[in-house]
Structures are given as structure tokens and as C-alpha cells.
Length: 109
Length: 112
Image (cartoon, rainbow over all chains, first blue to last red; front, side):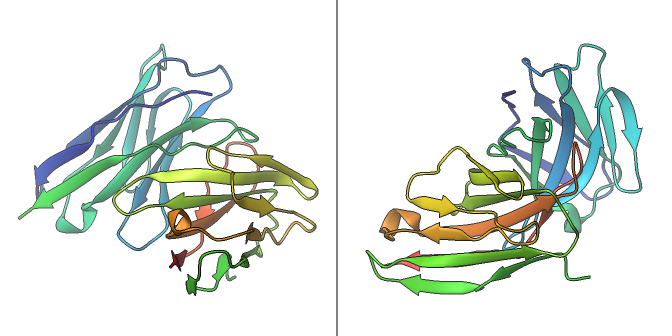
């Protein structure tokens, strides 16, 4: 079961790019890396998922180095509405999908 | 398409009472799970299921039971409620291997 480590909190300003790094040193061969976003009083929402190299969608990019022991979620040009908790998950279906404490991102005007 | 539906949204129990939190999904998802989230904390996995008839324990299973008699439903039973079980409970489901989780809107439970 791969354990993940993320920064507890981060601060940014509107319009900046935010990079949140997740460490997962004992990731298994079949494990994918998935990021979720959670707003207060809501369930987490899927942002992006990847296995290796780079994945990009309409809201974020995910960078995964060759050794896959870490990953970086990149949010381009954040706005106040990106203030949320971001979780990195590592696991395969059938595994216990453990969320961890997440990273609290605060975006300031 | 309703997605993942949790009921009730709010519940107050007295210590020692039992109750069932309901979770239903209409997406034909095989994988379902229950999490609890205490104030200011991350989500902790209680129980999960990879298909009908199959359940397994998560990080914090004590005091909770689950069953998965159908693909659609995954109820969570509190056997004898304790104040330590005061939390927000989220149900989630996913289609299959390495697919994204869809979450319900949560049940806020208070045990007095």
C-alpha cells in the first residue's frame, strides 16, 4: 500500500501557477496516481490521473518523473475559486484507496 | 443520472443507538467505499467493496458493518453509536480498475 506525503498547506495569489508535489516512494508497478479537489462541505472531486510522464486536461497538468516516486499537480493561473484541499492518491482498483491529509491551498486576491 | 446518492443528509443519534447510512449509485459501478471525515482532517477509509457480495475493511472499520447485496447499494451500519463517530460520512463509487471515484454529498452525523 503506497503511502503519500504532501505539504500541509500552500498559499498563492490569483493568476499564479501553483505546483503541489506528492511523494510516494513505495509506489507499485500497477499503481496509478490520482488527484482530487475538495471544497468545504462537499465530497472530493476528481481532477486528474496519470501513470507516467505528463498528463494534461482542461483544469490541470500532472507531471510524473521516470522513477514515479513523486508527482506534481500543476494548476495554471489560479483563481479564488481554486481555494480547496487537494489530495494525492496512489493505488490500483481493489486496493484500499487512502486519502491522507491533503494540501490546503489558499488563493489570495 | 443521479450519480451517488446518500441518505440522510443529517442525523443526530444518542450514544448506543444504531442506524444505517444509505448509499446508492446508478452508474453500474463495481467499486464502492465509505469514508469518514472529521473536522479539519482528511478522509479515512472505513470499508470498501470491489463488487456485489465482496467487502473488506479499510483504515478505521471498528464500530461499522457493511454489506453489498446488489451492485447499486452499499449501506453502512453503525452498531452502537459513540460520540467518537461524530463525523461527516462520504460514500464513493468507481467504474472499475483505475477509474475515478465519484462521491456522494455526504451525511453529517452527530452522536450525543
